[in-house]
Amino acid sequence: MNDNLHQLRCFGCGARIAGAEAQPDFRCAECGDLFEVEYPGWVQRRGPDRPNAGALKWLWRERRMSSEALDQSGVWRFRELLPILDSFGNAVSLREGNTPLYHLPRTAKALGIDQVFAKHQGMNPTSSFKDTGMTAAMSVARERRYEWVACASTGNTSAAMAASAARAGLRSLVLIPEGKIAWGKLSQAMDYGAVTCQLKTDFDGCLTVLTEIVRSNPIYLLNSVNPYRLEGQKTPAFEIAEAFDWNVPDHLIVPGGNLGNSSALGKVFREMHELGLIARLPRISVIQAEGANPLVRSFAANGATELQPVEAHTRATAIRIGNPASWRKAARAIQSTGGWCLDVSEAEIAIAKAELGAEGLGCEPASAVTLAGLKKLHAQGNVASGETVVLVLTGHTLKDADYTIDFHRGTLLNPEEAAGYEKQIAALRRDAIAVDATPAAVLAAMKGASK
Ligand code: F0G
Image 1 (tube, rainbow, N blue to C red):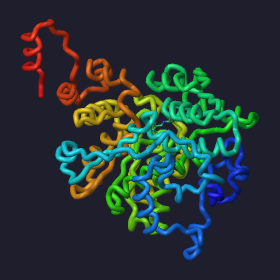
Image 2 (image 1 turned 90 degrees about the horizontal axis):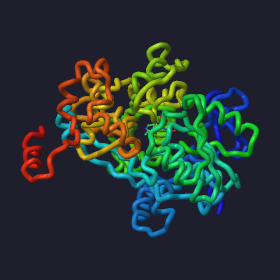
Image 3 (image 1 turned 120 degrees about the horizontal axis):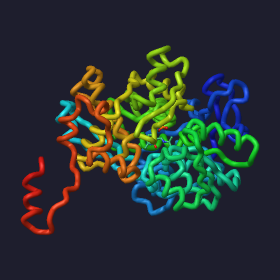
Image 4 (image 1 turned 135 degrees about the horizontal axis):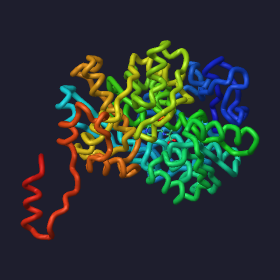
């Protein structure tokens, strides 16, 4: 059976090409913009390739009982809406997806918002949302018989790629900015056997070098400029919609780095709406760190018609990106859904992360921008109290344990960054206490601890 119903459409000039015709850097030969996967059969209302919304909802639910490997993947369970392979038998899966959607009652109460949830994509096999996109693009790499795959990364993409390549029996090359990624992530790339090169540049510099390499070597590029990555990253939206019985939440809040994830979510809700799976679109808001906020600046300067690249600085290293590739797609996701794009400070990120921790949901700093952003949006009057909001938590807390320990020890932020937030920070800090090895000393420590 041929499972392949897709073609690629340039986001800039609209040129259409077959999937296998894409250039190695996934840039349009006509205008240099990025491609999106499109499925021509979906638009013909009575055509044989247009999926039937009701039948799919039923089928996807049935598959939750299945013991087939493909059905147990939270990506390939939805494969009717991912017809990107000649054969689904070529899929490379680590049983990604199927991540939990947690209710956040304390956060909701503190903000006076009815329902706040966290979709925890850090609960994936390599502990970040990247696994969902990686299974899709790695499967294409295997089907097209590549021997080598590669990515530039702030850490999570490389972890996901290295693991998936190892499963597929492919070699993998990782380019990372030296000294600027969290150890947990670096250790994963090593563990899964990638060739890992630390370059004396930032993420954007790594991607530039890699782009040059893939243009003249048979290596498959697995950054999110690869449109198949974004197809896999659509699937958390199916899970969210399914969890709400196909009544979508009012608002989704995502972190913004290279802006692939927000682009994928914008695309999938539009497609679900067009196919009749959902009746309306949720707002999609993108939150960046203040020191890595090119999209926020672009909205302010020119309504996001032109990118304003920055030299990026933030301790949320996952989103330390100044020249994001998918900015146009992300801008469309925000504009077409009525969402917002804003930035949050280092102190706001650290506090939000500790607050999520106090709800029992660890995450990495880049994920915590979502809660920091929600607080800001609420304060600005852009989120009403009756709304249902979903924060997309992108990475697991153990990815960057140093950050968490520094926060609780009080060594993370400098005094200027913490200015005005001292009380909130003090209330959230839980440093380990050195006590004598006696029951009395331990009990005294318990009594002295703040609630
Ligand atoms: N959150 C985490 C934990 C990430 O690792 C990333 C991106 C983002 C958010 C931003 O997502 O790029 O789709 O806007 N990490 C990439 C990497 C760049 O190399 O792992 P985005």
